[in-house]
Image (cartoon, rainbow, N blue to C red; front, side):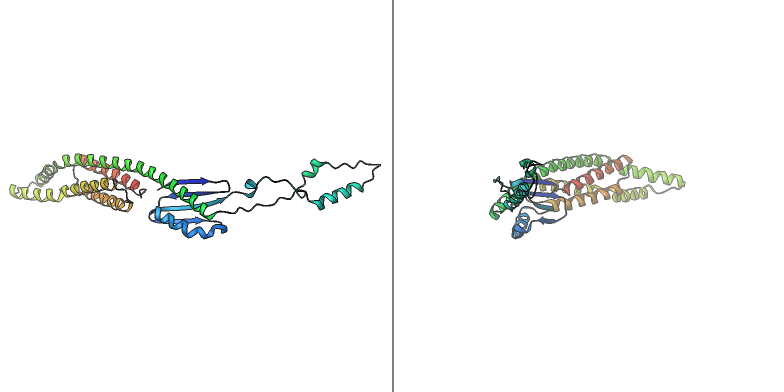
Length: 281
């Protein structure tokens, strides 16, 4: 499932990104100073998530943004050299004036001392857990939205099946009419009982009641899975594949044009539902 979380602290930040994936794959990027936390961070992530491509980043704040305010110390050797040079100038022909503003613009006069942050590893783990919790909340919100979308698809599919069932009752009559018309075009007399047997046989082959029953059962299973708190993404994905397979079989057996059109709508609905189910953990 797609989600993003970030926890910002004064000297660092945790960032977690999650996108769809068949399994669970974790990519962790830590600086050398806290490399020992890698195993702990990955284990906590595995306990919290079961699916997704997860990227975890630890961003260090630049030292110049976190350095405390300290009194600047001028390099005494450099200052003495400037003073000696000023005193050596001819006092009668030129005025020796030291411009403090110009001196402060010299980067060598006020050397910067880089500040290397020292991290509390226990604190880092706690802030990571807060970031992971934020990610889980985001994924849960998306999951609830996807649940509503899939349930709408289930209701649409069920409505289409009802319409297909109503039209399917006309299929034996259509088969009989087609067979009778074909025999009439051949200008041959056939025993009516024999025609009735052939119509019954063809109607049996074209009967899709079995596929309808299995589709309804699978749709009920999908609804049950969406009411379970545990991860059900893999089972939902399997059910979606089975529903699509039954819909394809139904499309082969449906002979009425109106019925075939409804079956196409059913396949489109099921395919859309399958795409959404792949995003559910």
